[in-house]
Amino acid sequence: MTAILTDLYLQIPAADPDPAVNFLFRGVKNVYNNQTVATATGISEATDDQSASLPYTSVKELIRAGFLQTSIVSVSDTTSTKTYYKTLHYGSDKEEDDVETAITAIKWPTGKGQGGTINGFVTRTRVKGRMD
Image (cartoon, rainbow, N blue to C red; front, side, top):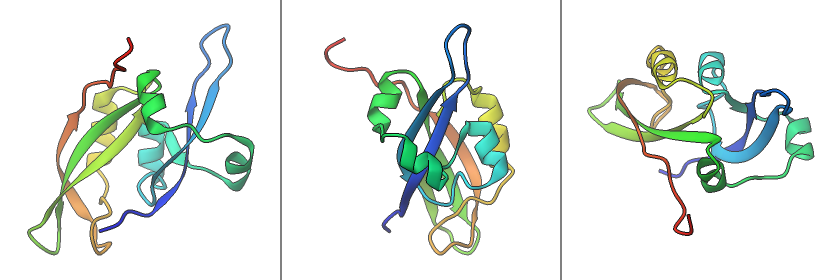
């Protein structure tokens, strides 16, 4: 199954005296459009204005810089016995427990769009560059 990508928007809140930092990157469509998930992860689907005004940043760069965390979510399809493993990104300023609580309350989009239930949530370790 091929994932359809869309523009995603991440805003890291201001830390005095620094201003808020905004990023635009590519990610899976129809995951972050749910308001509960968008609030918990700090990521939302980008508006046309955000897409036009911000440059793209790769997910790898955001993870290495410490702005983005990545988790693997295990999802069981409600109409079949299939289990899917999905990647979920969330802002580094968000707590892992809050993200897990928020996403388990929704139906996760799966294969044919029926939605599935969350079975597991595992946080990946942070990617480090070889030149560090």
